[in-house]
Length: 360
Image (cartoon, rainbow, N blue to C red; front, side):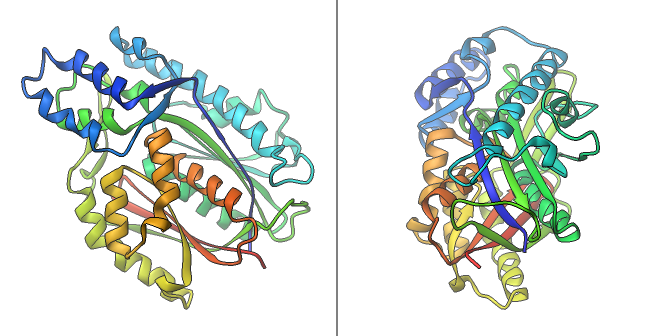
């Protein structure tokens, strides 16, 4: 069974309160949207207090082309990846001794908020001493599901190569996609939720040579599921001006009706039920999304409190967010011997689930 051996997260440099985000949105759109005041209530009901951005709020007061936004994305995504990888490979909370980049066998780079060819992981390799034989697996387009999907693909790799050490790196710079001329409701909802962040996870096969400081979660299995003909539930509408968010209000209802059977079937395949899973490590897409998780899977407030806290402090950073939740679970459950379920949903419409267990 592959094991999650280390994890680190990165905080972007500019912190914005939800009140300031609401005021900035009001200033940018009040001349274009006569019913803006009613829409701005989503800022009050999102369960977010603060979030971190890669650019200052003032940056959004002047126009920027798609090319300019994307160039900044490439530069900052590379920088944040380097920072969070270095933190992960020397994290003394989990590792007895640092892991050298040259010892890593594969890197799975996950992002959806910018375009780069060669992908950002290649640029990272030019700044850190990875082997030039490193296997690169860039994943694009999975949005909020990307963090869980990255762990799933690392699990697959480590099953095939039991001595492997794999890095999963998620970087999203959602603020660079914000469109100041888009007067659709989905753009305002996105403005109330999305933030910037980065995370890295080290996953190792069961024959990898690595010493750990504490009890770490094994990955038992993973599963993916697609809702057919649901491309318009969430994603990007790519226009000349950049990436415009697609975000339907039906997402909580879809979670309530579609997610339970997916999770039940997955657990039954492992001869388990929902009662066997003590920890629910959810991607907090928003307050309504977390409430839909609770209702659909009969979860208690205690089971989602870490996800709620991450949402409150960081907002929805897309793919890295579930890894911020996982980091807190790992720090708080070093002596656990229980099952946990990591779940994230994203464009497709799709779900990714990862079953883990602390201890042997």
